[in-house]
Image (cartoon, rainbow, N blue to C red; front, side, top):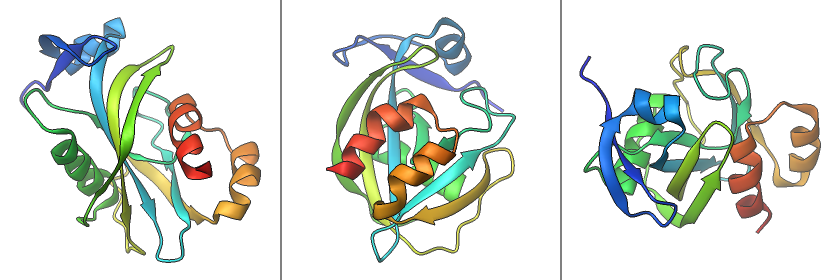
Length: 162
C-alpha cells in the first residue's frame, strides 16, 4: 500500500509541508480533515463505535465518518471517500461548516458535511464495530452513557444542537 501523504497546515489552514500520515499522527501536527454526519430520513444521527485497532480513539463512539484529507485532495472528495470506506454508502453531501480542533492526540483544520441515508451500512471491521441511529431528543442521554471521542463532543455535538 502506498504511503498516505497529507498536508501539514497552520491553525489558519495554510499548507506548510506535505508529510506522511504516520508523521502527522506521531508528532500531532496540524492537518486537514473532513467528516460526514449521517442522518436518517427522520433526522436521527448515526453514531458508531470505532474499531479497537484504530490509532486515534480506539473503541470510542463517534458521530462522524471521516479522517485525514490526502495531499491535493478537496475536503468534499475526502469526505465522500471516507464515508464510502467507513459506512459503505455513496450519497449526496451537504456542506455544514468549517472547524478547528486542537486535541491532545489530533490537531485538525477541517470541513464538516452531512448526508441522509437509512442504510444499509457496510462497516469494515477494522474501521467500525457497530452503529446505531440516535434520535436528537435522546442525544444527551446517549452521550452520557457511551465513551465518545473528544473531537465528536467538541466539534459535532454543537452542530447537532444547532
